[in-house]
Image (cartoon, rainbow, N blue to C red; front, side, top):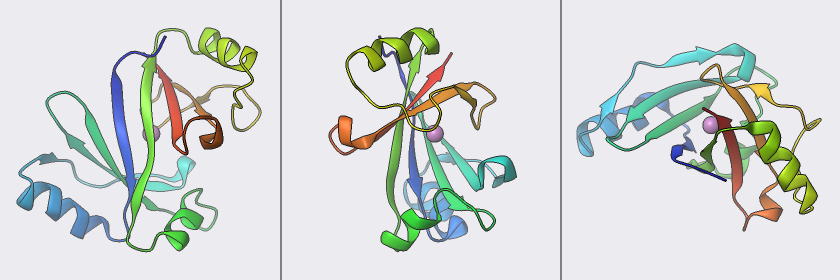
Amino acid sequence: MIGNLNHVAIVVPDLAAASAVYRDTLGARVSDPVALPAHGVTTVFVELPNTKIELLHPLGEGSPIRKFLDRHPDGGMHHVCYEVEDILAARDRLAATGARVLGDGEPKTGAHGKAVLFLHPKDFNGTLIELEQV
Ligand code: CO
């Protein structure tokens, strides 16, 4: 059911410093910061040949990643995103196995303008999973 790894998201305490690490130390192609107020994050996209890394930093009061950064002040891996062809079929298949879909279970428009869902980390080895319809 799942296809390509679309991205790995890492919450960082300092976007400029994290961008410099990926650009200068690791030699990757790194975007300028992009503010996504609707998602409560500012993000930097690191383009790798086969996937992306998203560096996330909280934006605004109600940012959904604020608590994560409070618990992990050095930053840390936040979620992995797998591509699926049909997000509603994927959701229904997962729900039938008892896996928990976060929120109201309906896909939302994600950071790339595509339909996404998040799956409960307790059902997936402690890893928050994002599904994105491609
Ligand atoms: Co994501």
